Structure formats: C-alpha cells, structure tokens
Image (tube, rainbow, N blue to C red):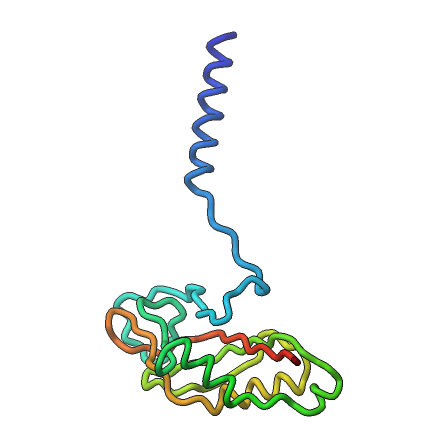
Length: 157
C-alpha cells in the first residue's frame, strides 16, 4: 500500500512540476495596454524569409516615430482636432488604431480596432493618415513592413 501511495505521489509531483514549467503567461486585456503598444502576435516563421509581401508583427527592433515616444505624444497633441459633434455631446474615450509601417517608414492602411464613436474614429484615422514617416521595424537588421497599434485618447477637460 505504501509503495502504491509513494508511486502516486511521485507521479503527481512530476505532473505538477511539468505544469509549472509549461505555464504560459496570460494575455493582457486591451484596457491594460500601455499608451503605445506594438502588436507582437506571431504570424509565422520569420527567419530566412525574403518574401517582400510578408508583414512582420514580431521583430527585433520595433518601428519608432521620429524623435521617439515623447515626440509622438507632442505630435498627436498638436495635430489632434476634437470633433465638434463629439465635444458637444461630451463623447470621450480611447480609439485604438492598427496600421502598417512600410519598409521605407510610410504609414499606410489604418484600421480602427476598438471604436468609441464614428466621429472620434474618423478623427483618429485622419490623424494616423497624416503622420510623417517612421523609422521602420527591423528583423535581422533589415527594415521590414510591420504592424503597429496606437491608442488615441480623446478626453474633454
């Protein structure tokens, strides 16, 4: 009986140890994202791929706005136009926009991932479309087309 109990306890401890090693970190909910978040979901094998049509979402160096994050925040604050209808109706919130940064740094194909209001969504898309070129993301030291998620906060004071 002791032998069987010892074998069961040993097996249980081995399974528990393996479960500890295989634990996968949980995903962050969208509401807990930092103010600027790069999309890092893996799409497929990246190494050695020379296909120019692949868009990387996992990279060594993420895309960077000219001057870095502080410059991006200043640029957004100086170029954002709060829609009058949204201001009048006291609508505020966070619109998350996903866009592509081409190999040359051009910002293209913005899409609203999380909507608040059609007027705020339109302004967020206008803002992204008017951005200057970024420093593109790099993989193995080579510029690649990458995705980027950017939350745009609309807050009335």
